[in-house]
Image (tube, rainbow, N blue to C red; front, side, top):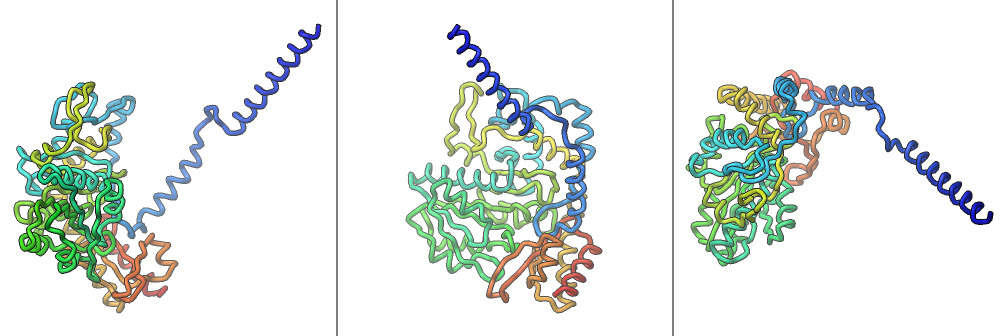
Length: 416
């Protein structure tokens, strides 16, 4: 009788615990529920409203991927999982990838940056930072293979902030080189910092983050010839400028046959206008062969990339964009953003607003306007006492029209 009574108590306790757990689960909506479509629609509406005034960062809001997504849905690929793991230049046991399209994108860009198609190696990256990570890592491995020494990494203090993070991740000695007031690496400071007894990993900025400055590659090479470090690897961070410069009269700035470099990283979500971060990384097969490939038996190949699984749909999008847009349209877009950047600079000068722009740049920086203007247009802030203190910039991308520029300048003038 006593044992039966205890059993009833235990059953009641268990039932009570289960009831509490169910109540907690239901209150926290762990079980599947209907998607709150209204909330998502409100979010989408808010993003659309923000789009036209989003001029403070290096993102082309003219994504124009409707036809791609229509094809993607109609093809049924949304119901599959694709993965670009491995080396896209080699056959892979895992066949559900888009390597063939990835390779065609690499082959399209190779001659634009001066890489022979039979010597180039590259991948579609997950971002510009991913491309820079590969450039620095491949550079380290090549320099170590040549010298058996750990290199020193040299980069401008105004280059993208990811360089500091990547140097930290890769445990590299980093030497930040002072920049002039226009954002360019000061060559005399680079010469003082360069240690010829150690291999040099030089990351050059092809358009600094805030001022859109370009490091003087010819002057850097002159210092290298003068001090002759035991080995040198040059990586170009051309996240934004590397997108449009190949389609302008100044294309030689990113042509390694004119100004030599070992690797280059370019973003896809900037000039090319994708709806998610991605990019292109290019180097040579010679550099590739200096890395530790980490042969993976179950893939039946060596995997040279830092990132193992890679986005297969990104390669499809990039291929689609290249095929749909073509050289002529890329050239028109490149010329338009440079013309409009020049127009913005002229308009600000006309209202006597302090303003600056690099020679090849679509980035216009100027004295910081009111907080209301900063917030309305999502402008990025900066401070440089050499240029009067508080600054802001506008990156003139494809969605920034002259009408939009007139409106911005009017607001800056009215709310100064």
